Length: 375
Image (cartoon, rainbow, N blue to C red; front, side, top):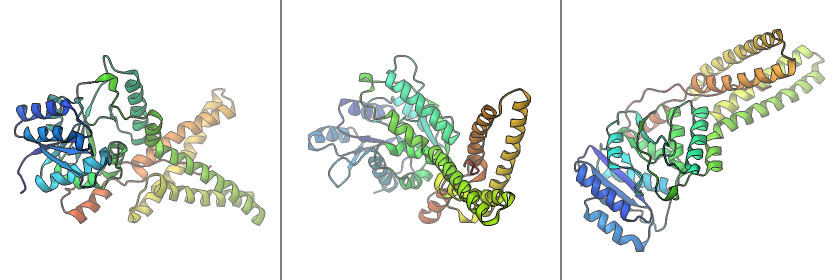
């Protein structure tokens, strides 16, 4: 039977120990009005006693009917579905089972929940922090800001809170294991979901041996949109060169060849950026996006000329001036496209709203893409 509650603390647990018991006991004692839902992430029969003790403390315990460990993302989605069934209309606060999140911080993050906003509990990595964690999070934080434009200090935190209206959206995001939580943050600005960060205590146990952050793999995952953007630029440059040679052979006119090649390569670049880099699936917006893309491309050409002229006036040689100019304009193009050209924010939530009927309207965030204008 559904239970009325304002918020549920959702805790995925794989082979938990006394720290989970301590957390649940502290939550039940400190905030008895909050419900606690623990998801057994395939721990096995050897941990049945721990979960029985958790249930005895007043928490609900669920497990996937299919045996085995399916991953943290899977466990979170299973828990979210359970919340929607058992506690309709309740907000969700996700916390880890290993003791790294204090009850005070869980309540602090829960207190910042509001419609259309994902709240993350961000550590500041001060004091006695393992070098692996300090470096890994610094790299992740910098790359995340470069790709999304969002200032999130702690992209790896497992302490997060979501309003009930965002639960269907959370279930729609792909990812079954530890990449899921990163995927949520990467998708948020594209779907018009605000991200609010609340500072929490930095707690590390046993030199953070339980951390699953992989500096190389996870950094590449964050960089994926930017790497795709670089790839589409290279592909468009190849198209531009091929079309230039082909048109020159067919027409014998350098002017027609340059203009025609740029039109073709620019069109290819636009389509690749729309569908591959920024994955803007709203076909109704294509005409407006194309107009903004052309305006940006023209602006970049003008800006490039003026920057080259200025640098040469200052005595900078042509080649280094060209490299510096193109490097700056590359990131300018990326930022402008991401924020203004391909405005995909809100589309995912609109679709969920029509299908599920439980997602409230969220004001889109202007995110988007990058202009590499094909050579």
